[in-house]
Amino acid sequence: MMQGHVPYPDEFVKRYREKGYWLDKTLGDDFDEFTGKYKNRVAVSAAGKHVTYSEMAKNVNRLALHFVEKGLRTYDTAILQLPNELEFIYCFFALVKIGVVPIMSLPAHRDAEITFFAQFAGAKAHFMPASFKDFSHQEMSRQARAKAPSLEFGFVSGKGVEPGFISISELLADRIEERIHVESLKRYRPNPMEPGVIQLSGGTTGVPKLIARIHNDYTLNYRGIAKEINVTKDTVTGIAIPVNHNFALACPGVLGTLYHGGRVVLIPTPRNDVVLQAIQNEKITLMPTPPALLIRWMEDPDLARYDISSLEWVIAGGARLNAEVAKKIKPVLGCNYFQNLGMAEGMAFWSRPGDDEDLLLNSQGAPLFDDDEIRIVDENERDVPYGERGELLVRGPNTIRGYFNAPEYNKKAFTADGFYRTGDVVRFYKGRYVSVEGRIKDTINRGAEKISAEEVENHILAHPKVENCAFIAMPDHVLGEKGCAFVLTRDSRSLTLDELNKFLKEERNIATFKLPERLELVTSFPMTNVGKIDKKELRRIIAEKLKKEEGRS
Ligand code: J2J
Image (tube, rainbow, N blue to C red; front, side):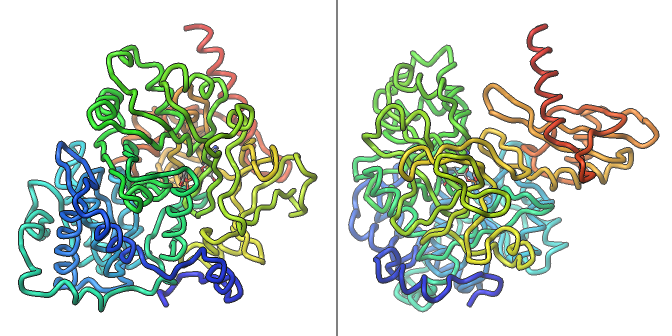
């Protein structure tokens, strides 16, 4: 078994198998099945190229053979930091086919995150783009390699591969299958009870948490969702958010679409003009969209210039969809929507086709499976009366039983009987439908990208001028929330946002999306009666201040 993975208890393994949730198939088995079935249909469109299922299979098998030849082995881990491009698809499937577990890192991650993943999971390979947004991932990878000796290989997509790195294009051009038989890959088939993919948690702690999803649970995840929302071979799914996210990859995302013979369109950036043009050109029918994207499209003065009539459904997830925004989706975008409360840890709540207006507007959906168990509890872990608010606890056939290699943290993050504590405050709305009312976890939800407050605070505290700080969410009309740093400086010294961010970027090397977007200098902090900084009060203060400023402008 892969070291550090928390297995499901035997009785649940038995139950999930018997009830047909777990089919004991790997991600690679599914890949072989759907590529064999849908051969000449187009599977993926990206950068003007249209790749059929058969071509995709040829490229994936070729890469998998190369990876084995280089020395990658089943249950090794690899940091997969490729953006929304064909190489992502090829590398992802090639890795999972031979049981190498990809760590689904974002192109925006920087040295702090990459070195941590490499050291924490002993990653053997790093997959990265040659050029992406004027940043040298190869330079970063060299630095990470110096600190994480396990990192043996750097695989690079695109042009401009530097010495010491392996070009993915060159591997794709080398017909290794003429020397080594594709059938030999069967030897590397992983056990479906072992981790197939490692997703990342926005987390609430100093370092990100790794979420190892086993093949049985992850294949169920996309199969289950795709079935529930009627994905078919006519579905064209547009991916404008980073494909590495669970939402984009498996809810139903890339995997659920390909499983049914549909087509995936990879969109390189979430910029309005690029996305709207892609919907028009590629006749996209389904899109996963954080509310922030929906708001941007709906407010775009050029919206009417694009023909987006192919769009049938958008999936609003990752952050709370405001009812006022939801009401405008049909009239402005001309499509229907699903609400989805999802999490990289697994369980997914969905609204269903045909849900009535009230349910659709006011609830984030119901769980997918009969064996999804949900509890809504008070601070003493007692179930609250139906309809009242409490923390959402979940357990089920696609929900993890523990974070990877984090035994101490798992004691807090999971109940003794294996429920995951989501940190979300919800209430039952109707039947098993829930409505998200808030959260108790200390995170910032920036346009659905989660940022751990503690992680950023630790970096801010490393600044020589900083005595104490609190990183909190402030409201934002489009993104929902942005990060605001309240800082007490040493000896009342001056500090600007630019100065702080230069330090966080250049000295601490953290991803840009985590940077504070506002700095408030204080001379003291409001405290709670247990002696902690009162973040609730800080959130109130900044929200009020923003409101006043808005009134003035
Ligand atoms: C309010 N909060 C929500 C919603 C997620 C699909 C969709 C989203 C994610 C995701 C995902 C929310 N309303 N509709 O993995 O497959 C907040 C909750 C939740 C956390 C999980 C998917 N949908 N959230 O966002 O792991 O706080 O996954 O616990 O990044 O996002 O974040 P993450």
